[in-house]
Amino acid sequence: MLLLSENIRYLRGQLGYSQQRVADDLIITRGRYGKYEDNVAEPPIEILLKISRYYNVSIDLLVSVDLKKYPLKDILELPDNRILLPVKVDNRGENKIEIIPHKASMGYLNGYADPEYIESLQTISLPFLTFGKYRAFPADGGSMPPHQDSSYIIGKYLEQLTDLKVGKTYVFITRSEGITYKRLSGVFDEALEVCPDNSCFKPYNIPLWDIFEIWEYACSIATKEFSKDDLQLDSVAIMRMLRELKNEVKELKEKTR
Image 1 (cartoon, rainbow, N blue to C red):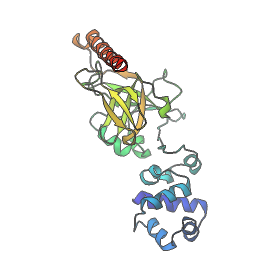
Image 2: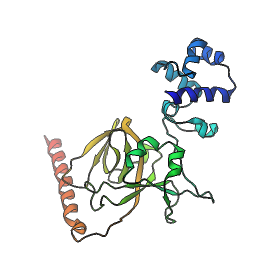
Image 3: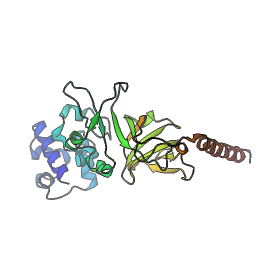
Image 4: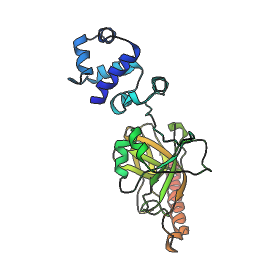
């Protein structure tokens, strides 16, 4: 919880408040609040919620992002439960497309909110991708043909869950799986249902609390030449259609019972 202690000390300093004033507003003792700033004690969830509301900064940001690296005005204007998205720009101020390497893809979970990590990544520029923030992720070729394991999926950062569209493909950054590229097949109150295009894999749910980021498919880059077998897509499409037809027939049968 070191980030939390540093963040609340920083936020208090930016507001020009004393520890006593903050403690009085939170209805706790100054000594107790001081222990949170000194990282001597961790606040229980009810106090953490109070601190989050007091500074108008989400708990996610308080415990996972070094707030000193961002303008306070930008932090306070973020919608609830948003994570700051570090981006890399060139000397003309244009966003670059960061490349998440295959061998170090799991490291993205630790560095996705760290500007220094993002700054260390190699980048490419694709002028036909505009109006958004893009990032290149290694493909999971086994479950999403025709994309091979050596390919990259370039995704556009999704600002809100309401922008999700069933039937489209997305790169999901999650606690449990890391980076996974799947097709969205359902949106529920507490989870998203995703479906690999490879019929050997079954659809499954990703809880909303498990998701860090979502990137909508924009384009892909293949680093190896396709073989004829790779391009036999008709069978894959037919199997997908048959599966969808089977589900529709099942739903009709259930409605007529």
